[in-house]
Length: 220
Image (tube, rainbow, N blue to C red; front, side):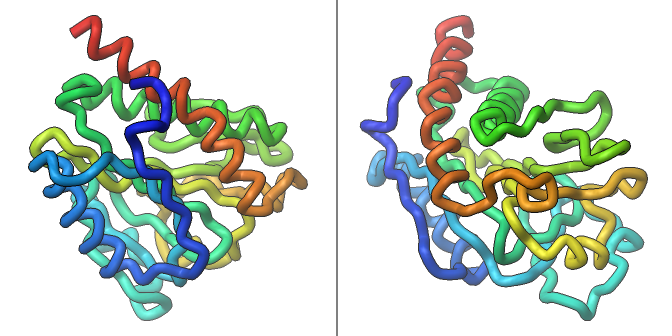
């Protein structure tokens, strides 16, 4: 259970419209729950848009006319998605991998941190702040966002890593409700920002992520 042999790994080369991705995730999650489909890790990019999580506050949408806004159904607040940002949707059966939501999110955080380490970025969790953070000059900045939903113990949604998006597009929202700190990207940090390199790093760290879930399941 600690490798990718039982999981579909999908990379979509073209921009994927958000409603189509959401519909695909919902139907695939239902099929996984019914035992009719394999688990899925899906890597893609969206056209520019904002998504509202279940805790989104209206006043944190600063430019509602700038891009389409979609209710996501995941946890969290407002996020931006767009070209140059790697979205990773994680559809796993947590009946098999441990019914512990906190551990699941913590393991995703570790997965992102380890992937960024492979690209030369020293990143970390930050107490009281959701997402993954790194140093950008003299300040801390968010380089990855995490937002998951679990329905009938199947996960969907996942995380987003800023490879080389237009960072000005984040100005239309208060990203994840945190106004005090900026966002950054691999490109801005001067690191490898091409998608194939980022994808390779994420894939290389996937077995360790799956092992963490397996170990939690065995402790439960």
